[in-house]
Length: 255
Ligand SMILES: Nc1ncnc2c1ncn2[C@@H]1O[C@H](COP(=O)(O)OP(=O)(O)OP(=O)(O)O)[C@@H](O)[C@H]1O
Image 1 (cartoon, rainbow, N blue to C red):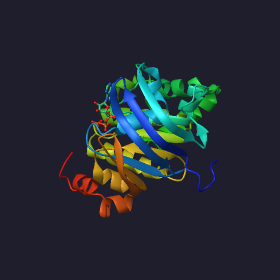
Image 2 (cartoon, protein in one colour):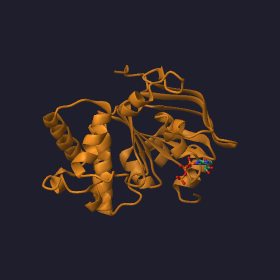
Image 3 (cartoon, rainbow, N blue to C red):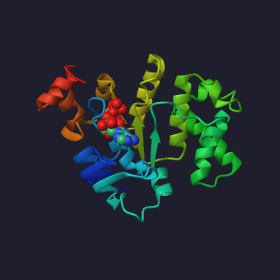
Image 4 (cartoon, protein in one colour):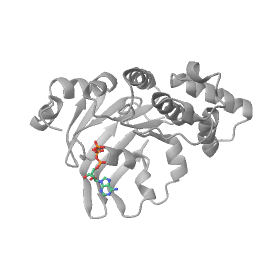
């Protein structure tokens, strides 16, 4: 467990490039433990790129390079000796589009657990139920766990993806525009879920929905053209931003 004052994730002077394209410059940011940090900014400013550094997802793609420092509980996450499987079990991720596997609802979640832990059948069933309950989906699927996940609605599939991520008991959860493709009810359920994670899981939330960021986050960082313009408590960023660019963005004058 990190000390109270120690951030769960700390980024220092982070740079990132896709081959010759520079996507992030000199980013310094902390994700406070057990809080929700929103990453906001216009399209292409580098929000998703930053998320992909937290779990080294970029590492799967040649030519994508991060520089600077990033730590999880004070331990380097960019170095060559990092156990990436372990890192990704500690830092889970949910994408904009639901990425269910072509298998049953139950198997979608059990598959994720089996990648990281050896549980008995009964333990797995319990973990699946807990994860689906937490993702506000249990009531809708408990009688059809053996059905293909593809038969679920888009909103249900996204909650299934969140359940799959939570089933591994991550310490950090990265949410990349998790509700942008969803109906208002599914969106509201996922927002409630994000809020309920506070105090247990450290969350980084990328969203274009500023009302959502204001409702769900404790801290917010505004990025523009690969740089971090401003970072503060959500209350400060959404009610009295210090920088003109932040003001213009949150009042809908660009982006
Ligand atoms: N695979 C890639 N190859 C080259 N450049 C990329 C790649 N992915 C992203 N970029 C570039 O990196 C920059 C940041 O992109 P990123 O997807 O992180 O922005 P974003 O803020 O998440 O955007 P959006 O809100 O539209 O999802 C953009 O200029 C983008 O064109």
